[in-house]
View (cartoon, rainbow, N blue to C red):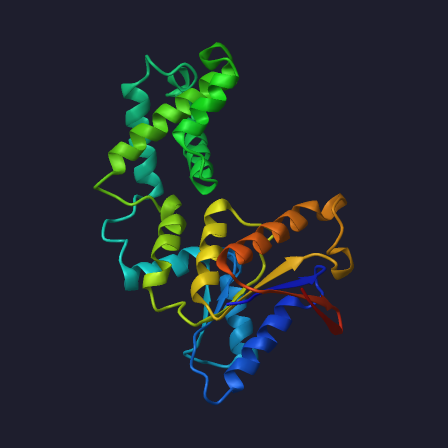
Length: 279
């Protein structure tokens, strides 16, 4: 279950190098383990076309986004017995909450009928879910900002109240798609889809806390996980400048590997050549 970090600047051939590794695995006559490419949702169709052109059709190769991988895991290990709430359904519930609590909400109460407020509110709550910010976290920050005395404190306190109401409405009725990755991370070990798999995670500029949880779970069940990072190999040891976010991602991934007891291998990809170093 080693972790391979493949560095390279934009356009240096990181994706091509991943596809070449997949092709080598397909040529191994006795191998039958799954080969999974995890890519951003918006890149999945392009990557599927590239795989077909480079590798041909193969039942072993799967191109999945994190959410599509979650769906596969839930199919095998359970976790999706209740229907997911739709975006429209979420907004209808939020409207009902705003109307019911109009006299209690200091910030959103006076905006309940304003056009676009449901989109803003739904987006804020989805971002909180993606980054695992709880109602308690929001209230704690609101308190440090003076509670309901300031506009930002009011907004955060309102978000905490609305988040709690929404969670209670969904409980036992619907699943929240914005929490699917956390649930998938908990169920991954019980699913066959990634067991003994080789996994390539390509095309991401960074990861949310839920996605990091999934990567940590993958490191415990897959034979190998490779993650590409847009970083000049010569700057992999730098600690400042434009590459700081990518370096922080690298450090987080290395810590995940250490927590999982996985070795870490680092590779640099440059246009026209590949250099390899190990750590």
